[in-house]
Image (tube, rainbow, N blue to C red):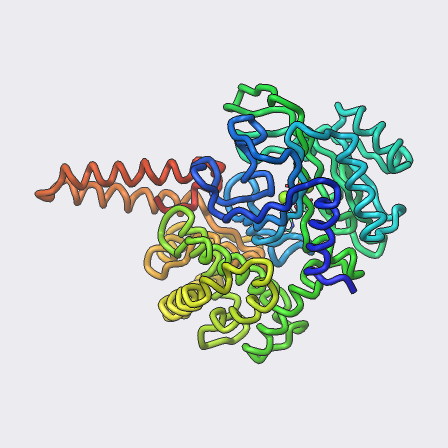
Length: 470
Ligand code: ATP
Ligand code: MG
Ligand code: MG
Ligand code: MG
């Protein structure tokens, strides 16, 4: 079996042998980039190289990049536990050309790697191209010998990749693996494409533009290449599994959880085991990169992830803190590739333990309130915004934790009511302050805080920003 570790190594070695510099993963918190909450793709550390603002001593690079998609343009938090292919933390394997090779060679390298080095059967693969990109379609026919019906033309933004609202971007071509008719879901571009039968494994982005603002796009100095393939998705395919959570690395984490909690990983708590394995990875890697739980910005995303995991531990019947006990297992799986997990080991363990013990009694009491309120609601019902706000304000329940808790029962949350309750409380806080002797300083502080919060959330879509505390 090719383990996740083997697969990462094969990838980097293949591109090194093809003239690429192996560059270490950059941290999850992008340096000097307020447009982005977390590093969400391999290209993030090369953003300024693509735009020509920064020069490197190489024009080809390859990485295995740590990514978190739990906020901003790419947010998979609500997919975890519900699809076979999404994590909040994952590794993106990538190769990059900075004005060196373009489409032709990018397609050739990708096809050789997956069919020859990794040995994937060509007849299980299909690709998409942007519908305006006849070049790419012709190259796939020529290089891979794919028949026309396996080169699917997509007119939507699915085949136009953007890092965020601004930054380098371009049309893309994606490679999908067909897991076979026993799994529901249609091919890309079809009405039922959201199923998990056809799984996207690799995205080849033909970087040609830089988006400067909503309606201003310029050409990059030179056409470039940026690719990204999820290590866990590739591992699933190569290990004969359909589900990312069944690969060696995730399985070992799930089993460690089951052992620590005394639970059956395949029983009633299957989803909770997956969520915990996923959230454990994001929480530990975020802490290792300097994020600490807090009530705003990146720290609040971390807190939301940790608290969601804690609710799942509670569901499994764990009375004692659980997550911190799993740190050694994660280190065993990943610290040879990411030594920061060992370097920050003590900080990670203490942070998890502290947050878990502090949140515990609020979690228990808040869930009791949530139970009582939900008991009166039928499937399809809505929890009032005031209750959601009370859970948030008194018990520290992030809005998305409440939504996640009710989702399995088909109960929604009145988010407008929640936001209104939040706004009322803020207005009262402002009113109370204006009467105090330090009104001016506090007003300035308050405004500054709101402003700084707003900057932090630049990468957010309006809908995600709604649930945020600033
Ligand atoms: P999907 O459509 O499945 O959500 P995507 O189109 O959002 O994926 P890209 O932005 O193209 O993904 O990222 C490049 C690659 O990174 C994907 O082809 C996939 O292999 C991997 N990837 C993306 N998101 C995730 C995730 N949440 N968990 C695991 N792997 C991911
Ligand atoms: Mg996605
Ligand atoms: Mg996609
Ligand atoms: Mg994609």
